[in-house]
Structure formats: C-alpha cells, structure tokens
Amino acid sequence: MNASSLQLPRYGVGELNAAIGSLLERGFAPRFLLDATVSRPQLKKGHLWMTLVDGDASISAVVWASQLPRLSFQPDDGDGVVVVGKLNFWANRASLCVQVLDVRPSLSSVLRRFEQVREELAAEGLFNPARKRPLPQAPGRVAVLTSVPSSALADMLRTGRERWPATDLLLVPIPVQGNGEAQICAALQSVADQAHALGIEAIVLARGGGSREDLAVFDSAAVARCIAASPVPVVCGIGHEDDTTIADLVADHRAATPTAALVALLPDRQLVEPALRQLAQHLRQTVGLRLQGERQGLGRLEERLRQLHPHDQLQQRRADLLQVQRLLQALSPQHVLERGFSLVRRSDGSLLRSVQDLEEGLVVQLDLADGQVTTPLGPVTLLARAPAPGPEAGRRPTE
Image (cartoon, rainbow, N blue to C red; front, side, top):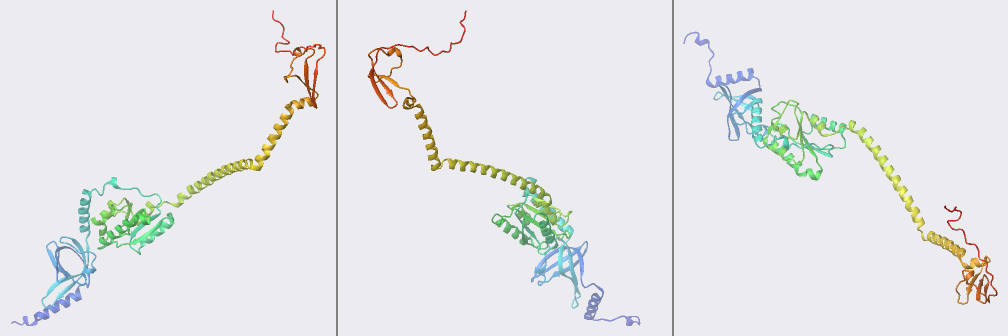
C-alpha cells in the first residue's frame, strides 16, 4: 500500500452498512410522499409486498401485516398511487425498502377507473335520462347519507331548517372516502328496505369537498347499482361543483354541493308562505260561506220541524176545522131560514122552485126556521118576476 491509501477510511462490511444507515437516517426525511405505479403486489406471510416503479426506476415496498387492515385502499397491479412512507434499511445485508404507512390512488388511476365503470354501466342503461325520476315537491321525510359529524352535514341541517322545517331529515352515517363501498351499499339497501314503512320520499347522498382521489369510493359500480335500485329518487351532492362521480351520473338528480342537494329537494318557505296565507284566507272565506249556508238550511229545517210539531199541527187542524165549520154554517139552509126565508115543498118533500108549479088546492109544506107548516093553497095569483138581465142585455140590436 502506498501512503495515500493509508489515509482512506476503513470499514468492515457491517460497519459500512451501519454508516450508510446512519447517513440515511440523518440526511433523509423520516416520512415522505411517493408518486409511483404498483407492480406485482402479493401477500407473503400476511405482509403486502410490491414494487413501486416510475419509468425505468423501481424500488421495493412493503405494507406490514399490522398496518394492512388500516389501509383505506389496497392497490392492484398497474394502479397509480400516492404512498405515504419511510425508508427501511437493513444494515446486515444493505437492503433498502419503502415501508408503506398509507396508500391512496393517484388521480390518473381514479380517472381510469371512472372511465372503466362508466363504460360498464352505460352498457346497462343506468345513465339513460328516461329512467330519472322527478323529485317530490315537499317531501315529508328525507334520508341523508353522509359522514357524521361533518361540516357538510351541518350546512345541510341549517339549510333544511331555513328552507322547509316541516321536512324530517333522517341521518344515516356512512364513510365518504377510502374503502367504504360495502358500508355505503349496506346503508342504501337498508334505507330502500324501510323507505315505505318510514315514509321516506327521497334520499340524499352527500360528501363535502376534497380531492378527486378522495371521492373515488363514489365511482364504485356496486354503489351505482344500489342507487339505481332505490325505490325513491336519489339526489347526489358530492364534492364541489366541478367534481363528477359515477354516483352523480346514476342519481335521479345531481347537485353541485351537499347544500345544493337540499335546495333542490325542499321548497323555499319565504316564497311559499305568501301563497299559503292567501290560500288559508280563501279557505276561511269558503268555509265561512259554507257554514252560513248550512246554518240557514238548519234554520229552515228547525222552522219546518216546529211547523210539524204535533201540538202545532193540532192547533192548525183545529183552526182549519173551525174555518170549515163557519163556512158550513154560512152555507147551511138553516142559516138561510134564520134570516127569514122559508122553503116550500110538495107533500112528497120535493122543492117547489117556480110559481108555475103552484095551483089552488095544492098541499104544500113550509119549512121555517123554528118548524114546519103544512097547508093547502087557496086561490093563486101569479106575479111573475122579470128575468134577470142576460149577457145580451144593454146591447143595441144590429140592423
């Protein structure tokens, strides 16, 4: 060895590996984000091993078995991901690996999955505008599926109270990001099964703002089919105005935000109240007139009942009989006789109506007011009365 080689640092293999490890610990961030594509993921002894690639570069990565259940997303081969990780360096064999603490789909992966599911469901006709149902005008109860608690829920509850407090909002907690597909489907199915019994007229599926990657759970084909199978209309208010998920495309109505979903469903009481007051006044007037008519009808019936009362009927019959009696008395021959007249009858009782029927010696019967007299007639002197003037009297003879 020459003199210059005597000045170089000298290590054993273990020492060199330990020095490299110490250098990495001092000079590299303890945690970092890594954009990559997953290659050949596989489970070994409960640990998820994979290779993270970017062009020609690659590095091994592992999700330990203790961390694996905590992941909200488990990538498949070819998925673009964003990894939260740290470096693991094994000094005994100078092996470097990324320990994955969390993993999320990258935007490119989310958009690719979105396109795949959209093509699949379009072939099934789930995006057909003809199957979209109209929203109820003033629903009595609405099921709200969202994260509880959340700022989106607080905004929706405030909007519901301000716009139409008569609508009951039934809250159903769901996960709104990560691997929550099965829970969202279960919640949708539960609401669908009880919709009729609970009087649910519409469903709101909502989530507040976030990155497009955070909304990936709403690109699920299973969630979309549950929305399509709902017995009541579904309104989606997911993310921001420019975010569109598969759930938005299948829903009966897409709202730009969770708050806009409640606005689409509930009437504005500030606009409805004047019309309701006018309608109430019209109803009061209509009912008042109807009651007035009914009272008048009842009054007529009461008067009729009074007239038909047995006592009143008896009094009326007595008055009628008295009037008839007076009339009969006025027309009675006896009454005429009492006024000084008499009836002249033959011996056989027939009335003599003309002086032409009288002759001397004829036996006649005189009916007077207080009795009868029978006597033969003496000499008869006929004094004929002039006939009463007829209808032709007073007319001048025609020439």
